[in-house]
Length: 287
Image (cartoon, rainbow, N blue to C red; front, side, top):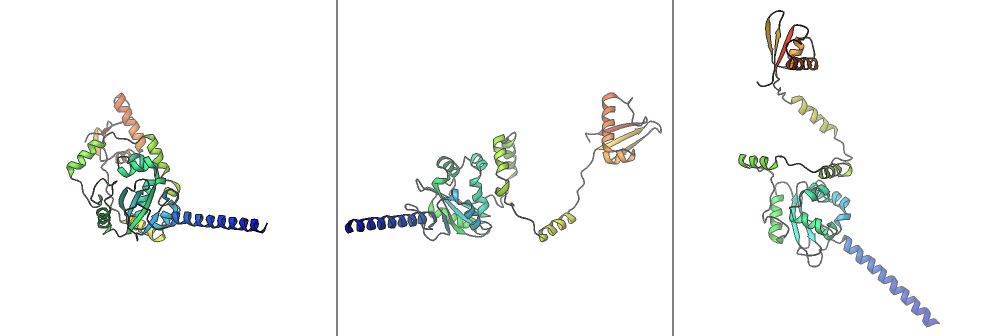
C-alpha cells in the first residue's frame, strides 16, 4: 500500500514537472529574442516577433515613430526579405492590409506572404536608424544576409529621386485608363478607417493648429482666370465685355445661376429669348 502511494506521488510530481517545463518552453518560443534554429540572422538584433500575425499591437507600440531596418523570415524555408521604413511601423503595417497584399502581388515577399500566410513568418527589427542613414543600414544588411525575396541587391527608395520628363510621360501613358476594382477600393477604404488610420484617437495640438492658421493666413492667393462674358444691350446698342461670369452677373444685378441659365436658353433657342427683354449674353468658352 505504501509503495503504491509513493508511485502515485512520484507520477504526480513527474506530470507537474513536465507541465511546468512545457509552459516555459512555449513561453520561450513565443517571446524569446533568440533567433530560430536554421536562421541566418545574427544574435543581438533589436527585436524579434515569432507570431507577428497576433502581435500587431505590440509591434506598433515598440516601433511607432521610429526609423529602421526590418526583415521577414519564412519559417518553412528560412528565406528572407530585408526592407526599411521611415517611419518604420507605417511601412510594416502595409503588410497587414488586404488591399496592399492584393495590389503588390508582383513583389516576391508579398507573393510568399499570400502563399504561406503571415502565420508562417517571423518579423525581425534588425536595426534602428535615422532618416539620413537608414538606406545605408539597409544596404549593409542586404549585403550581409543576401535575402532571397528582395527584387534588387541594392537598397533604396524613391525618396529625393526625380523622374525624367520621358519617364513621367511613359508612366502617364501606362496609367491611362487604369482603375482599381470596386473590391480593392472597398478594402482600401476599410483599411484606412478606425484603428488602421494613423491618426486614430489622436488630436492636433494647439501649437499645430496655430501653425495651420499661420500657413493659411500667409498663403498666396492665385486667382483662376474666369470665362469672358460679352453682354449686348439692345436698348442702348452697346456691348460690354466682362472678365468673368461673376462680374457679368454683378453688372446685370443678377446671380451666376440665373445668368448661366439664360445664356443657355439664348444659345439653344436664339436671341428671341432676351434677358430682361434687352440683353443678349454670350460666354466665350474657347478663349
